[in-house]
Every structure is written in structure tokens, then in C-alpha cells.
Image 1 (tube, rainbow, N blue to C red):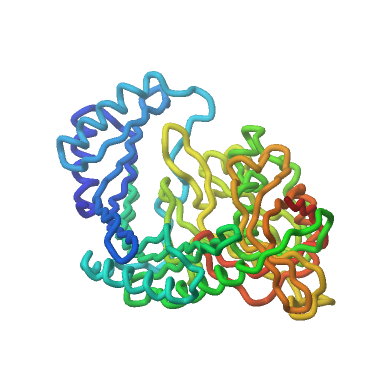
Image 2 (image 1 turned 90 degrees about the vertical axis):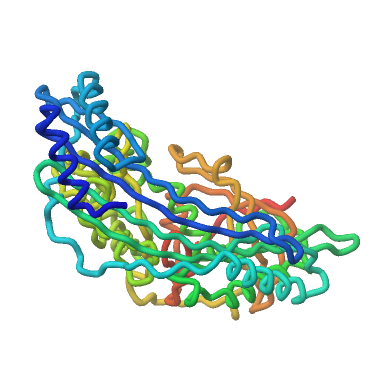
Length: 446
């Protein structure tokens, strides 16, 4: 992708020729490659380089036209500006989006950099060796049907007609392993793990392998569970999956659209246990996908969402912030409509608890490692969920795999029923989070 200053110069010249006074451009280029293997042979090799550019134009009546393109050369930008100019005649007349008031504010000085990508052959060799080691970890492991080793370079920019210009680049590498078992007279069991880092050299492939093997083996001796109410421990991934599914609680756009469990008046009220704090932190040191600005050019920053159980902030675009007399938080996504979305959750204990808990001493607790079927089992506007899960029944450190079960409840009740937030956090694709202990949830066995 061209330098943002070059793109800005082209866009300014073309806009002037078309009589456009107000416009902005947001774009990205992604260069990625990934491999999958099957029984020691390459199964799928993919590589792509794609660009996406969003152009908005305001007309004299202050309505906006939006168009997309994949080209940022003179011809591509001219056509996009012209198309957006024509579309502006049909733009919405209420709640018209505008430039972010922070589009020219200083950015965080911490910038990610691109690292050289490894050869495809190197990715394949690494994954073939890892698959072989995983299958050798136990006689019952029959295959690794889902696996992947990928690397990605991403570059982003934002500019507008008032002189805003931003640009950033970052690299990431990731590995995913998911193994299955076959034992005569028993159901197949499975488990997976994921790791991510800036480059292949730093990627903890061995740790991913060990976690996948340990989880898979731990599920071999499974037993049914009696339906009832249980104290539940949620893994980092399980809790963040639920938090993401009910993120309308703190999404300002969802609240304004009446598509949220919260209202404007919910700000400042207690919605969770005072043991829990949650922030959205795009600049967190452990966030490999760190980004310094959103699609409107607003700088990202750490936003405390829940502080000691109290809902303290909503996530905003510049438009929602204006309507609610707040400040933009750097969470805007440009499209035909500006939407709001999180970056990277940081969940942590709000204070030192009076009582601590441990899986080594707890009796008859359910440890949920992963929840599934979120698309079908979550009613985001009602707050309820009923989800199949992978996990164990734990008694004084002894883990017994649960054959098949679902966990159900209301997310708001779950938040207020938290009795312990562990201190040691785990990094996941969606954020960093410790294990969360919930006093009681409904577990239904098969």
C-alpha cells in the first residue's frame, strides 16, 4: 500500500477537481498465508493479498455517501470519490456521521512493526512435525482434523479533508491444533488450543501442542453428570466468549438502537460482583493485534468498562459519543453505517477477595473449558444462554471429563454471582482473563 501522505495528496487533488469539500478515506491491506496438514501431508495452502478502502463524501446538504474500493491509485480514488459524491444525495438526514473530533489528536507512541514472513515450506514442515508429535502423545489420538499455521501482515490508514493522516502496520503468526480420539466402545473425544505471537520465531507451538494433548487425554475417561445446580469455574476463553456474546451491555450503538440489555441510565449502576473489573485495552502489552486508532481516526486507549462491578463506560464511535454527550473511545468501524465493536478485553480481580478458592481443594465444581454453539444458544436481547460445553467435574484436584452437558443461565445473574476472580491470567485471541468462579449455574447432563 502506498504511503498515507501519497494517498492523501491524490485524494485531495481528485476531490478538488470534483468540487468535493469534505471527505475521508479509511483503508487496509492484508497479506497472509496459512497451511493445513493431514496425516503428514499438506492438506491446504492458502495465500492472499487484499485491500479494502472505504470512502465517505459529504455534500452541501451535509448528507453522506459511502463507497468501497480496492484501489488507492489516481483512477481508483477518483472513481470512489465520484461514486460516494453521487450517493450522498441519498444519505440519511438524521444522526449524520461526522469527523471524529480526535482524528488529529496525538497517537500512542507504541507502534507495532512488520516482521519478515517465513517461507511456506517452513510453515508446512513445522506443522507436519507438530501433528506427528501430537498423534504420538497417546495411542487413542487418531488424528488432528483441524489445524493451521498462519502468518499475517496488516497495514491500515486513515485520512480526511481536514488534514488528519494516520498509518500503522503489524504482523502476527498463529497456530491452532484440534485433536480427536478413537477408542473401541467409547465416544470420540476432542480438544484444541491456540497460540499467537508477532512472528513465527516467537510462536509457542510446543506449548500449544502440550495443551492440546493434555486436554484431549483428560477427556478419555468421561462420565455422565447429574443435572442440577453447580458451582462453576469458567476458563478465560469461556468467560470471554460469554462476555463477547453479551457485549451489547456496554455498546453505545446497541443502546441507542434499543438492542441492548442496558440503557443510558445503566451507566454508574452495579451490574456485576464488586470482585470483577473489565477494561477494553487495544494497547495492552499482550495484545498482538495492537491498534492505535479506529476507522474514524480516533486514538485507541484503555477504557474501563466495569470497575468493581459498576458499569463505568460505554464503547463509542464519534457519532454515539456526540448523541450521549461523551467522548469517542476509539471503537468505530466504518461501513454503510458506523458500528461499534471491542478491541481486546482485559479482565482482572478488582480487589483482594476475603475468600479464595482453588480447584485443588474445591469439591463437586464444574470447570468449563470451552462453550459452543454461541450462534444458536445465546439470546443476546434477553440475557439468557444455553450452551453445550467441554469441561470436567472437579473434586479436590481430580478432574473427571463430563460426557455431554449444557450450561444455562442469565448473563446478568452470572455477573452478580461471581464469587472469585483468580489472579493468574491467560492470554486468548479475544483478550486476557483469569478463571472466573460463579456461585451457581444450571448444568444439564445428557
